[in-house]
Structure formats: structure tokens, C-alpha cells
Length: 308
Image (cartoon, rainbow, N blue to C red; front, top):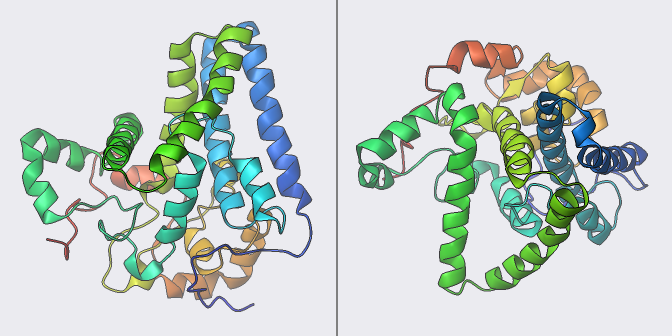
């Protein structure tokens, strides 16, 4: 197969027929969520939190999959599958639109043009003050990304969105009105029907789920002069690979975003040498390798080298 990048950042349809593995996966995620929340009192608390965090992160991976045109050719159906707001804080439509912009690979890591960049401009760095700069540095370590990183991500996003709504950005107030309406049934199910304390859902499901997602995204991108060398590969991740729907093979996803999640490992295996050459050898031997290198050491300087 060719691995030439698709420069479009619109929807990429991966198949001409219904993708049953993704349909089954969606049923498994949502069915497991209902079962876990309903019978949570019958399980040890640590099991509830770990399973809850896993399911929120897994749904995030499913949302990423449907954004790229799976499991049907009808994007309205795909969006309906992915739009259930289990994470509470992130409206699906905003995630969809910003993530598609992120796929303009020539702008990867740019704090102005890449909505998912972990870098900041030099001006923003100067305005942070000492505590803010410490936090930005700490967030570039894996320990920081897993502990304070979810809070940084969520609160930064919510503050930015509040500013968009207040300044009258077109459509933002409507999106948030629909989103707030959509999370009410989730909260009613969890707290009223299932009698789960809100703190348990917010921490054990939402926060831990966000931390697992931050583990995946931590080493996905790193600035390089050649934009083709800014996207990493994390190999040898059987369990976490399934959680991330093999998005750990990230350079392949950026080159061919229309490939279904369950096909990624075999396509990667068949094209490994080309892919490693394409991204300049930015390969990690599993997430333990990422942790060994960056648990207390910065993945990179948070200041983007070419954005003042």
C-alpha cells in the first residue's frame, strides 16, 4: 500500500460498508458504562475507578475513530455514536472540528495553528510568571501530565471556551447550550438512578479517564524542523494499544487517517520500515520506554522555537 500523506483534513471514509468491529466496540463501551455505574456498589472502589477511567478514555478513542469517518459512510450516524458526553467537559462537536484542524500536518506543534499543541509562544511564556512557568515545565514531564495535566487541560479549555462565549464567537453559545442539556441525562443516570457520589464520577471516571488520555498524547508529537518528523510511534503496547485503538502508531494515523482501528497493526507491520524512515526514527518501545525517559525529565522545552 502507499503511505503517502493525505493532505485533506476533512472526513476520511475508511470503508464502503458498515464496520462491525467498531459497532460492537461502541456497544461494549456504552453497555459496560451502564453496567459499571448501575452495579458500582457491588465492586471494590479501586476497581470502579480504574474501570471507569478506562471506559471514559476508551470512549474518547471511539470518538476519535468516528470523527474520521467510521463505522458508517453516514457521518451523522457516526457523530451520534460519538456524541454521548460521558466525559462531561468536552463537547463532541468542538473536539471534532479542532481535531480535524490538527490534521494539517504542516502546522503540527504550532501553538497558534495546531489546537492540540502542547507548546506555548515565547510571549505567553513571559506572561505566565514563575508559578505558571513551573507548571508548564512540570506538565512536560510524564508525572506532571498524569497528575496535574488533566486539570491543566480541562480548566484551560473551559476558560478559553468561556471567553469564546462571552465574546460572541458564532455558534459557541448554542453548542454549549446543547452540550449542557446533553450532560443532564448522564448526571441524572449516575447520581440519581445509580446513586453514585458526584465526586466519585468526577475523579474516578472523568479525571482518571483524562489522565489515561494524556498518557497517549504525551509523546505523540515533538517539534522538529521537518514536519514529517514531528509525529511519533509507540510500539509494543498490546493493552494500551487496544485502549487507544492503536492510535499509538500515530504516524500511520496521520498519514492515513481513514484506516480503521482494527486494521492499523497489520498495516503498520507491513510498512514499518517506510514509516520509521518517514518520521525520522521517532519510535518508543512501549509506554514503559516513554516513562523511563520522561517520567521526571521534560519531553521538550514548552516554548515553541519559532513562535514569539
